[in-house]
Image (cartoon, rainbow, N blue to C red; front, side, top):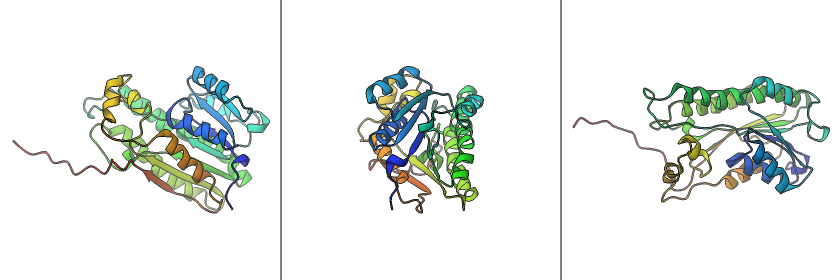
Length: 258
């Protein structure tokens, strides 16, 4: 029997753009209660005004701030209708730059590690005890094909997403017998603000990434996540990898002497 979306309380990180925004909107439209979190308060307020429903709670949160995460997700800290979170979508994440490892700004590496790894584990650790105690829950982590297929300049970004993949599998092992599901969703090219963030606001560079091809959309990734979350509770999708039809695996790179 499929899970009724109206029985879900979904916590989404990084809900102010891209996948997170689309995921929050879709779950609200499906009848779930949604806590949409992110760093950009103006966008959260705009989302709240637009959807105009008491099934949406917006909260400002930087997942890199462990104390803020623990304060927000402490027992009884959230309003009663939103306090029993049974789906966590760990979406907050970013890539910065495409420089080779020997030329990269170390601060970019630190920001990716702090967000893509530390932020994800802070939120997961805060919510897991409640899910285990209730014997119901679903952790959905946003990975990337970059965690499996390296490319020049993907260095630490790909490394963080490889962590997300392996951490998700390890959670499955730890949570066996507790009726808590874990899924790693690993998209390929998707036209969101991702590339613009990677190139630090350079819109022309960002547009060039998707030139001449049709990428996956944020709405399509959101649909996949809703489908996974509403499968019967005895069904766990461990890992799902999504690419646009016009993207495939890179060939081996060979450096040849001239």
